[in-house]
Length: 321
Ligand SMILES: C[S@@+](CC[C@H](N)C(=O)[O-])C[C@H]1O[C@@H](n2cnc3c(N)ncnc32)[C@H](O)[C@@H]1O
Picture 1 (cartoon, rainbow, N blue to C red):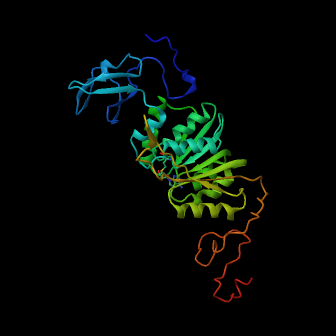
Picture 2: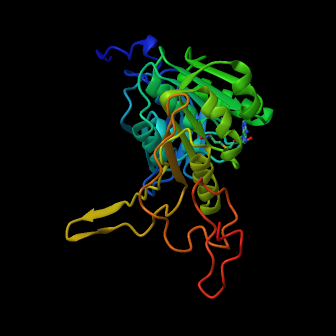
Picture 3: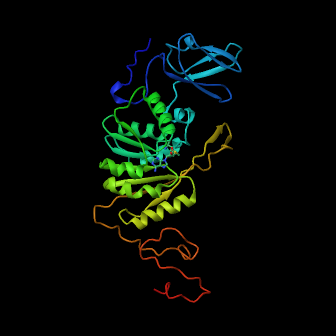
């Protein structure tokens, strides 16, 4: 019997200590690293190509043990971590990967008690990290325009936290309309969607001075369009853009080398801070790189950037200003 007290219920961590209970999720990993996640139910069996394991063999034991399936083969048994849960839970839309969720929590400065807005909720992966970070006394308001995704997210988030997290609300609708309609302010806005630039005005209207807008975008064209739209808006600081690459290492005796496999690209992150009402961020001192806003550039054009003319063409009246 465990003497470890459980994590306080009011922490809404989604984590339990102590013996595995009925209704909890466990994660079984075999010798080849294959993973299986399921909910513990009395009298049920987990089946795999190695036979079966009785749920009753696991219920009531402290996690961190091995079980042997009926035809041999061992499985390691633990409760799934949040980072493991989000990549194995049912998906509607693509999820924010744990490495990026970690970047968002750290670099978008998500703090206990924060008031965070996110759209779209998708499968609810980022939502779980945001709720963990703001805690029960913060607020995460998720917006999603597709009902079927909202349903998936609701199930996933409720399953992870074991009930309705008190800091969470989910609104069905387009953020660009639903956020202004709420009339409420917030500290952070996180946009994970195809066209985040369409929601920038709504984000700007809701963010408190000093607040942060963050976009999570998969392609360079989205990255460019969002960044330039933030510049053109004028009510934000100079946007910062980056991506994170995480590489596993193989460490075995003298064989210490980078792993062969790597998730090379997930998405880019862009952040900017909201200026106070009526305040404009100073223009960047550095001149744009030659050709950056040349004739081939068709995106939003920040103030004070003249149309560049190719060196072999005489300036037209328009570009000569
Ligand atoms: C990639 S998914 C989000 C994944 C989510 N962040 C996660 O970690 O599970 C993008 C979602 O944004 C939703 N969406 C796109 N534009 C939206 C908008 N303007 N307002 C609300 N939801 C939007 C889509 O329906 C889709 O479900």
